[in-house]
Length: 162
Figure 1 (cartoon, rainbow, N blue to C red):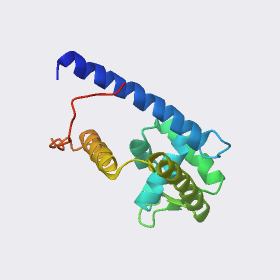
Figure 2: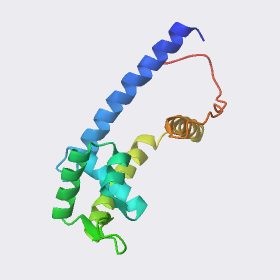
Figure 3: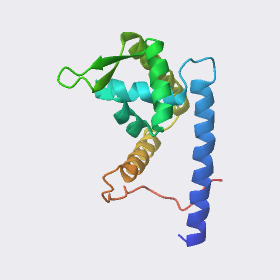
């Protein structure tokens, strides 16, 4: 593939992912949901970790310490997260998700899964597998390890739809 065509495809992918992120954001977070994206990712981080510190949440979610603290405080005030003092070191405070927080997170995940099931319902299995392999490849390339990975082999007809 020529370098110019490669760059054009990459630009199209950039535009498509930006548009999809915007559209998915509207579907997931703009219909009266009380949980905005940053707060959703905070709940997801704490749920997956079991418990974690506020600084670990900020690092994982990518918020500034100030913005993270404000969001966490609101989630605590709303009863979605709780603070638990470390038994050995009283200076350390662990965040844990409450049952109400887990229920809110589960509802958002169910909503996301429903949307993706609808969008992908008519994809042939071969396309789903290719899509999944592509997503996993991108995810691995974006991971902190930065280890090189081998590109999956995909069938190509040499054509591209625009």
